[in-house]
Amino acid sequence: MGQTTAVRPSALDGMEFLPEPGEPRILTAVDPSAVQHEAQWRSEVMGWAPALVTSVPMRRRQVARSSLGLVIFLILVGIVASQGWFLVEIPLGDSEWAFEDAGLRELADEGYDGTGVRVCVVDTGVDTTHSALDGQRVEFRDFVGSSSEPLDRGATAHGTMMVGLMVSDGHQKGAVPGITLGVAAALSGDVEGDNTGDDLIVAEAIDWCRTGFDADLISLSLGGERMDGERDVVVSAVRRALDEGVFVVAAAGNDGGNDDDGQVASPAFLPRVIAVGASNESGAIWTNSSRGDGSGDAPNEKPEVIAPGVNVISTGSDDAWYASSGTSVSTVLVSSALAMILEAHPELMVEDDRCIEHVKFALREALGSAHDTSTGYGMLNAKAWFEQVDPTCPSVE
Image 1 (spheres, rainbow, N blue to C red):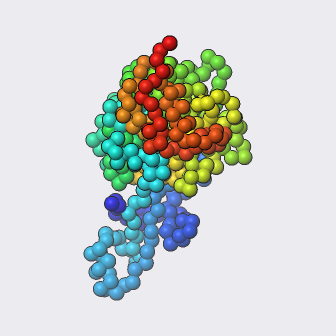
Image 2 (image 1 turned 120 degrees about the vertical axis):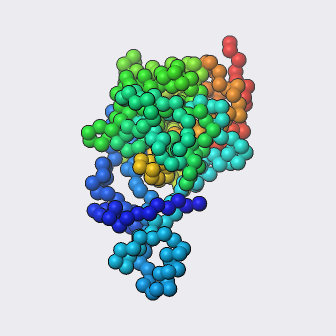
Image 3 (image 1 turned 180 degrees about the vertical axis):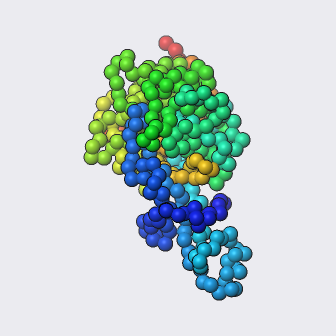
């Protein structure tokens, strides 16, 4: 059911209205003064971030001025009148296609919602004042400041969007609302409007997920350039988590296209980590999704999988809903699928890494494609992955 919000005409002063492709009668309101209106951004840790967050389109409609027509219209819908024009916010769009195409709703229909699985998100934090996150229990740790209450420190509410895809309960339902959620705020907006983070802080946040929160799964919708050896503290923190049997899912990166360097971001490049690329609604690879270099052995060829990640709607700042694009979004959907698998098979959550490649081999077999440096082993099919997993891990040698 659509959710509508009354909008005052004055709230749109200074806005630009851009026609939607294929439907010029639908206009998207864009604030040209907003941070990074025209450009994507690269930051110290995040690599290429998701495309600019955009508001859900609103329709501007002119209505006949007959008294009868006006009365009927007023009865049927809530409107705001201004000089013969009525601004009507149409029911909010949703991204059910993304959840359905990934196979997540099929598992949800069978009763899986992530219950019993501890999932830790390292990002900009989370704004739990959003109505769709109201009542959501979250174990929160602020590594940027000292807040004891959950908050989102991003220039855009990146963390809130990622969390919403998992647990929102409102206009759009999250994929795994039953998880036990931990959120570490390790990235924040800088003076240029970018979401950036210090390597040491991100590493500390990942360590907290492992030791302080006791995560079963860490979802990293972030990435950076690879560093050499011992200098890469983030890689070291991820390896510590993997060694203790914590599953890690990370964004492949958003630097695809003609200038792609042929490498997924760090820490997604690590063996045992599941690196995730992005696809669009038609199932094709997203242009900016980072490619792998063709190295590595199965099941660790990069990226391993792609998932929907283009114009996906989720919770944002100021109790609004936004659409964003990037491998960040895709990462959360793969993390959600894995949380459902771990819910069904808690015996996969052990204190060493012997089950991690076991589950990754199941992912490769479930998708059934020869590895491709853009699309990995194929498009996420949560149900097929779920059915392919053998809950019996290799025994300790």
